[in-house]
Amino acid sequence: MSFSQSLLLLTALILFSAFFSLAEIALAASRPIKLRQMADEGSANARRVIHTQANPGHYFTVVQIGMNALAILGGIVGEGFLSPLFTQLLVPHMAAAQAATLAFVVSFTLTTSLFIVITDLVPKQVAMAIPEQLAVRVIGPMQILTTVLKPVVLIYSWLVSGLIALFNLPRKRDDSITPDDIMAMTEAGAQSGTLDRHEQQVIENIFELETRTLPSAMTHRDAIAYFLHDDPDTLIRSRISDAPHSSYPVCDGDIDHIIGYVTIKDLFRRVVNNQPIALNDPGLLRKPLVVPDRLTLAEMLKQFRQAGETFALIVNEYSLVVGLVSLNDVMSIVMGDMVSPWYEEQIVRRDANSWLIDGITPIQDVRRALEIDSVPHEDEYETLAGLLMTMLRRVPKRTDSVTWGGYTFEVMDVDSYRIDQVMATRITPQLGKEGSEQE
Image (cartoon, rainbow, N blue to C red; front, side, top):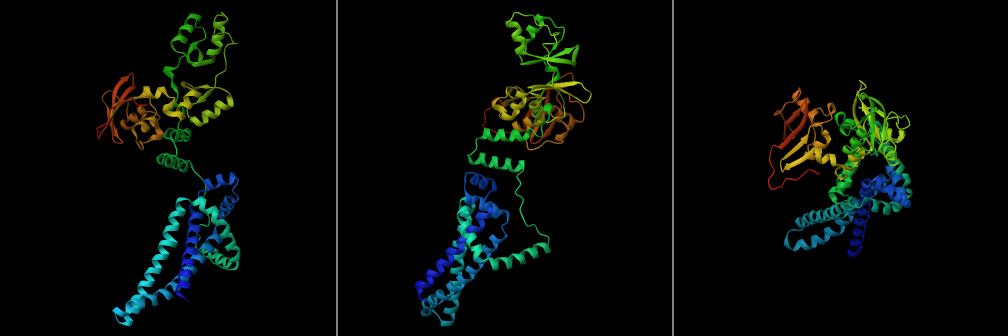
């Protein structure tokens, strides 16, 4: 075989081996979500790749047969025509035996390096960068090779299946996608710039609805604006003016005896028609949605959808009203700082290293604002005040403080055992940043 023929054959072996290396990584690295999207857009090859990923045994058997056979042939061909060439170059400078030995070492090193770089490293790095695009291109030729080599493939597959069964090894990968997987993908998208940070935060907040309970989003009992059923017209109008809301609970004596609710739309209609507002009118009252305080925000959304309501009263296990939640409250959690004015009121950044925080602020919002990874015994409480009580093991008083996550939390103001304000101060100050209000 001439020099040019040997060189052409070695080049062909290297390229074919590179094809098998690329095909292997392209199938393994292809993301099922991306492939399903391509299949939905009409790509038949994407559907074939998805099917092959579910049963990859024959595919990888062909890859290994091709790669190993070509590597052996490449070594034989490379040593066969490179060793004599290097021997002729070295003989004038050393003994023939030494020249032959050194020529073999050089040809072996050169051939091996060519296979490592061209048939292994380069194809695999390219396949890792664009796996789906390459997988749909190589699936056709690979299926043809699988058909041609089917007898050999079946023998190897039988041997592999026997060994896997003997050692009880896993056969298929788990392609199920968990919320953590989605969160990791959105975080990667935000870091790469393909996903806006606000969009990534909204997705994170949606999954957070499954773990956040109602107390983290509700209007607390002492802040609920409500009417008594015998309140006069003038008092009702005055309270609406002072505390405008879309709906108001109506009670008999106190907040724990709810008899219904009225909407601002119904009250406004009476005002426009010059009718007096009398809350003892059964035609004006509506039946309220009452839910337990242990519901998650995701469960609350389901309740809103089933009942066709936009707000609900929250009771504890003793049937006492502890708060009120509206559909807007839940959506404010989802949209985050884009539609959440109460968030600005609860967490105010004083400077680069300190924040003034309301004690009833949900602990999830505190963690997010201060970038704290975790807090102790998080399942036992809902608010920053709960964190302080849990860590102190008593009702905090003014000047009490705890340290966690790189911050010191100091109680600044207490009103009748209610923690009004807490100062969060970073233990290791960050210089060069101007303080601003937390958004």
